[in-house]
Length: 235
Image 1 (cartoon, rainbow, N blue to C red):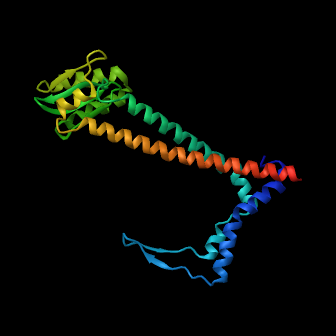
Image 2: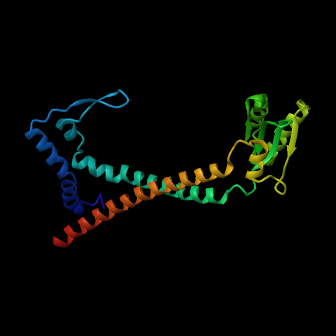
Image 3: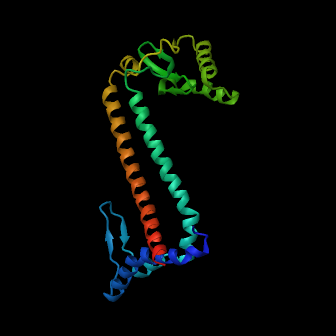
């Protein structure tokens, strides 16, 4: 559409219509002799209001606008759509991974009741300060290109072999603790239910924001298409 020579007159009219309010504001600012104010924000930073010349400089030429519609806008649309899909999946995943579902923990390292670290089923290692020395085995697993169960086994076996005094708790797909059980056993001060509710609320809030961005984007697209169609019907 944007590269079609026959569409240029209609697109030019839409361009003029879109920036008309901004040009009217610029004209009013100049007519009133408006002088931008310098203000201090609550955080102490200084900001200066935009002048009429700056507003005018922000308006692209028709050719630049047309170029943006062909290159930048499609990428922005794709970005909004991708963000919406991610937000939807985040809500679904959060709901699915409630406290009473099986955790992804496959190994826990401890010193009695003090947890030193743990390994996820994908091989990811989490350590606390007291268990930071185990990070070297994680680095070695990186160098070997290990992942999944092979990585879990490598890190677990390395810790067991080099630090026999460390208590090692191994799990598999059948006996891994639930998220609630893991939290209550090793992080008794952590409110797993409250944390879950917070994650749900955050995921839903993000989804609402992304849905609104997507809705506004679709409205803009529909508004442009309707306007252009109206011009073409009048021609």
